[in-house]
Image (cartoon, rainbow, N blue to C red; front, top):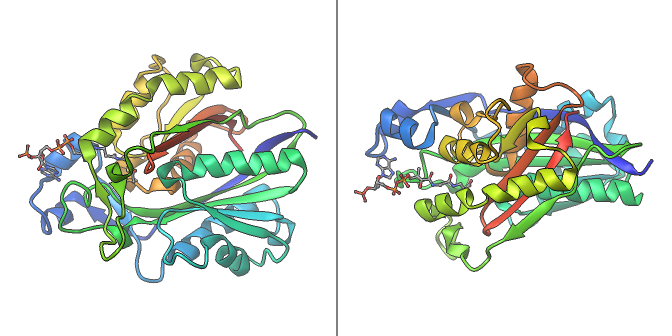
Length: 312
Ligand code: ACO
């Protein structure tokens, strides 16, 4: 077996739903402004016990069950997060320990909002190379820990949640080549500065323009996978905000291909947003097992990564 594929997908959405009206009680904004500029109506915000690790464990449990595997079958756990509660230790070993994945190697990837796609690519390469039979990718984020609730340009966007996939071997490849890149000359465009300032800061309009400039890259992702854009069953970009999602997907020029719009209800959950959005589309029957979908993550760095995968 020389290929890799997604074997199972699981997610966790925090119980607490925060409406735009609730946000208007904290900052000078309106439901209409938020919906018009971002498309967001509600977002999920974690309670104290819904930690990055706890949400990741819940999503991972579901992904393993969907794959028909037990924790002991996992050879590696990759955490994809930019909101780990501590710099050290990483999230992956804590998730693995809680799952009982005692044989697994563990490490985290911080690719900002592109972290899930980088982790999927890494996991697929590990499986293809034979260094692991099953790799669990756990994207889990608590952006609310880093949200400045007095900054109206960012607190309207950010949210919490987790998504996980299990990747294993396949006779033919169901995970296409990753296309990635970065503009690291602008670290201040999206940052948590540190050194006393642990709040998420963003140059919104600059990020917006950079994200939209990536439209041709989505076409490259399809080309590298040998899939024509019109053959896609869905386009699942990072759920930054609806205007970016629709501009990126719209740039492919395939209006009949469904676009993930989970951001409307779930807000921007950084690395977790793509598995959350894909799960939502699978639950709704918009895509089914084996369908080719385009995943495309982009964010802090500035960095991006995308690939075409077949649905688990
Ligand atoms: N309510 C009302 N007014 C607001 C709000 C708000 N919540 N936020 C900003 N404004 C005001 C500004 O103060 C500004 O007022 P001014 O003209 O008097 O100075 C005006 O609205 C326009 O501000 P802009 O920042 O230019 O607004 P823009 O139309 O660009 O929308 C937004 C802001 C939504 C943040 C937009 O820039 C955006 O979507 N950027 C991309 C952000 C993103 O999705 N990043 C994703 C990567 S990061 C990650 O995923 C973790």
